[in-house]
Amino acid sequence: QQQVKQSPQSLIVQKGGISIINCAYENTAFDYFPWYQQFPGKGPALLIAIRPDVSEKKEGRFTISFNKSAKQFSLHIMDSQPGDSATYFCAARSGSARQLTFGSGTQLTVLP
Amino acid sequence: GAVVSQHPSRVICKSGTSVKIECRSLDFQATTMFWYRQFPKQSLMLMATSNEGSKATYEQGVEKDKFLINHASLTLSTLTVTSAHPEDSSFYICSATLVTEQYFGPGTRLTVT
Image (cartoon, chains in turn green, yellow):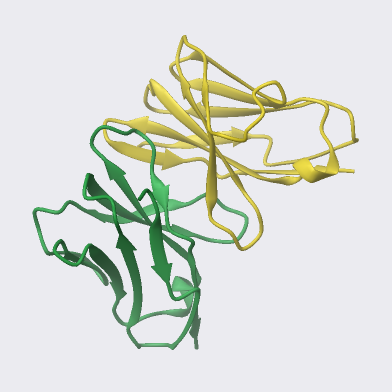
């Protein structure tokens, strides 16, 4: 019940395209859903996060869509750029817990 | 703001020796820090939760006698890999909590020969 399932495992997108990464969870106690971006040999960096009281959050080219009834959330990267090539992790946390539960990661490659 | 550093960034040690990795929150105080381990092309695996002034809480399957964690101050936590073996070679990442957000360090690549 603590798992967060992430798909796809890898994604190749042309420059200017839209990258979409999906995550699903089971634990209804989760109330915070961040996305992290990780470049090779570096630690993850917080990209954008959402709480379940809203269905969408946008920050620049990055948008989180959240579907509470389906227990799914997704990251959309608009106008994808080669510099966006990285591994993306979704995560979730419940209010009573301090630790994050991470998805398995998606390796995004944006072709020039 | 909210910068977390790790030292060293890379370390190579011989089998049987111990290695200490430092995690510092540079511009904030963190009552809670976390230690993760990451294998190539895999997700982050939580090893332990470190609270300032108290014993760390280890995840199931993580040997507390092998991975010693000390959270001596609100800005410093250390992970010591004792009697390291080649299978301990991995990327170790810490994070520090500020309010509700976790901020990650840049990671430490440990190679045990």
